[in-house]
Image (cartoon, rainbow, N blue to C red; front, side, top):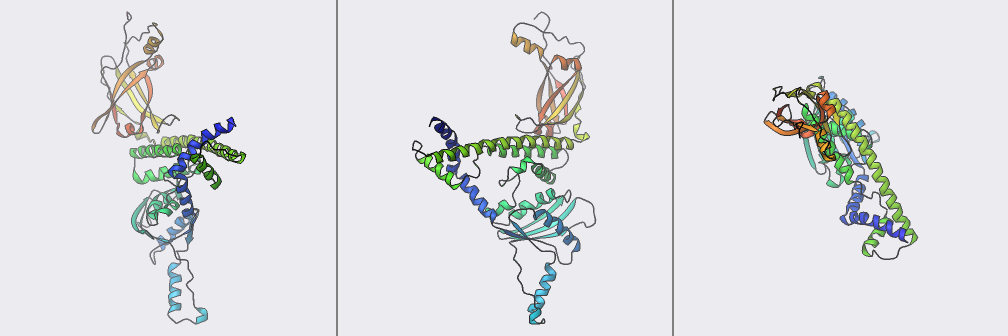
Length: 415
């Protein structure tokens, strides 16, 4: 019985709290709405063969989306003409075409601009659905599926009732995300596609870092979510909330243990998915770190005998303890007449004396943006360089560095 109490006390607090907040009820309601098929049709202006050809890419992308029924739109004009002709009375009754078409819930008309030009691809789009009309212009870096979905999902979602928007607002950047999103490359593709629409150049790296941090928040928030609770499990938790000291059967105990095991497995799966996501985002950001973004201009003006000899970004990292990706930076320096000494008086003093520091000012187009103090060990001093990391925000604003006083701490031989 003691084992049962331990299991119950550990699981009930978590599950009952989420049930009380309505999280599971809301998720069930969303799932039910998403299960109702929604008819989607992509169309092009009459006679526009170029735009009509582009529809095939959209149909291929959205045909993989569960919960959607894709209706034929490319031949809409021809079919409508035949139906109109049948209604005119000019066609024999046994040859008339009956209008048995499924009516679309959402119609998306696409007009291709700048025909014949290379990417970026520009489109005028009008989406019409039960919740309203949405007109927008799209600029695509490519015709890849990830770019198409990133550009069309949110505008289309605004044309359907809120309870059904999960059909389009999917992926790790939205509420209707799944564990499979950060496990593979889909989540990384979502982040990159969104940022390519919102930013360019150096700001693209900053956008990817910030969006990746938001994904991390979602994954961490999902760790305590008891997904897929059955009606029996929800009923048991409700009983535990009402009467925590009541008596429960072996079947109840098995239900609780099953919930606890699923919760632990979910946490482990999320941890692995997040680790993989960190690795892939760092790889992608490293690929975006073009030579012109690696350069940091610096002041080589000497302060006494100390001066900087070089500085630059070398790569991107994202450790498990960091909230967002950061950029690795190398600073090179020289101080030829400095005598770095050690004083063996006490463990703390040993540590302090092994680490020296010098200060830098990071500056940007609008002036000084931050101070950074670099700690150097004996190995760094011998090599005349030190490696450090800076945050995404600092990377966005930092264009040059210069040393400032007091540059570093030294002690005389007599100390």
